[in-house]
Image (cartoon, rainbow, N blue to C red; front, side, top):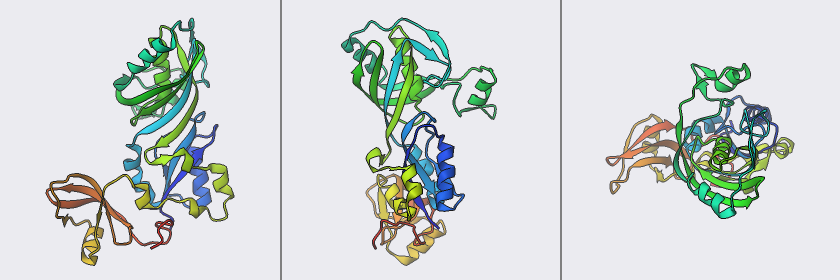
Length: 301
């Protein structure tokens, strides 16, 4: 059984689910999932979880993401990106680079977004994009998202290129549209590249096509422990403690009032559990079967 995460460089034209299906065939397993949707037109980092790695998804989707995007001024579309039908046309903005930079600054921090109709968010159990395709429009409640930083890489009256660092749940195409409106104009997203998702970076990603051609694709798998390299750890070398953790039992720890989510490892750096540390006890929330074949192909112990 192969357990871990593969850092896929998603190509343009594929849905995230298409990538999941490809990876299922490559590794001959149904237990595969992704850690956050990338639209078909978007490219970039898409961490794919395999085997026990699917149980890490909630800890990986929570992480900061980095995008490079191009927004085009003067038009809005029904999908908020280049794939949609035009819904509005306006004059181009008449702003200097400095004035546009000031507008970008106003979007940094916690902001409210109204998610697009063409999204996988569900309303009464039905994805919004299915309603949108039927021509049905519904009221969508705004959501709070966090924009940590926006860097202006290029600006003309026709378009701008931005690097955006944000929290989970952020729709970059919605942000592009809102920026256009703040410029007393309009805008849609014409290009999106995700360069980072948590600890997974584009320079370490593997193109999906290359993965399909590898004789030993398991070599691209990042082990469970390494996939959580940003999470603080506790080592349990005692065999009795390891067995008790495997049974979901909490363990007393000598700490100085540390709290939060931790990973529990054995002496060979294999993942035993993920849990909460509080009141000098580690309480496992999820336990893992350590030591199975391919659990961590990068571990030489």
